[in-house]
Image (tube, rainbow, N blue to C red; front, side, top):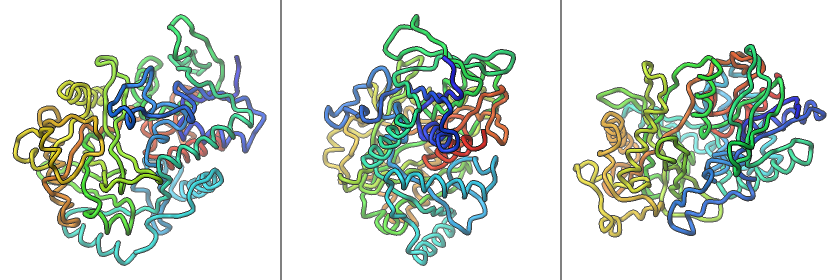
Length: 474
């Protein structure tokens, strides 16, 4: 089987690459291989069964068409016209330039609108109020980043990506669902194709797909697979920054002003004593904390936390991630360090994440179920086990997070209330940073890498933009 392009992964990066090729060269033979389900078949049983059933063979939150993005809050981050750099979204602009990245975002934004994205943009009004909040943040050692956002909501994002999925298929893109790429075919440093198996069959049912151009768009869930490919086929890469933290849940009223002005306020600080970068990420007003499962060679799978919000259903809580960025230059595989943290948390919490009251964490004691029942904040993730994060999360990262909470509390009073809840772990898996040319080609000829999994981007919009850019460049 020969194709002009083989795409590994059906997340936003891979989907927008396929879309861009169709627009420029519709006669090309394109195969997109996705190990998960069609998006219309993706659903998480947790909300109905009140427990994570660890879907087999892969988690429906992180796998399937649209990738983890389809199970996210559906935020499309744009940019401010006056900005001369990109402070969120990854490193695409370092390869293609700031102005070109802005043009790409404009183009991709138009495509999202075509498939049904909301026309409403958050964070463009209330400039005077935002400036006042930013000034107060700076007085307390924090930077406040405000980027215009189109908020789809998880439910509406599903509908949008379903329309995109059908469009690709109707216009000639072959999408093989429930198919897993187990290896790359590389001969004399030239990619020749991929080896695959059907997800629900044994290892004996292996078939080859030939192409001189393979696009790796595996997302965060495929970061470990990509690292293995780098080792096996001598794809040049370097250790990347890792993000480790917790999901934080607090009452809507504490974040009300920030939510009204920006929807997603992004605070960044370097709290003492370590000076590590700590940031808020993926803020979900009136949202829900969720779990997500990653396959793991030692534990079978590991369960992390994330968050989302819906257009049609609301809670009374805001949740957001508190992430510490760490570089481990002497560690060959920083992701293994992250996985060990997750394994330890899950081992203590009977295969689940841990939830803990802030007051209990500060006082050096665990949280018990009866305390949660009478807590003023009701947890939205019912499957998290009450416990003690300090038993299994690293001291350095937890110290960073606790001190950062106190800093933000001076800008948003109530942010450090003892009844607020911490869920752990929240970890963002990025592969080691793959060495890329300006055309996003790896050190193996004909092998390209886009999206979050290779360390290039972080988020829906930038991942989509990387895919579209490559489709025009290639």
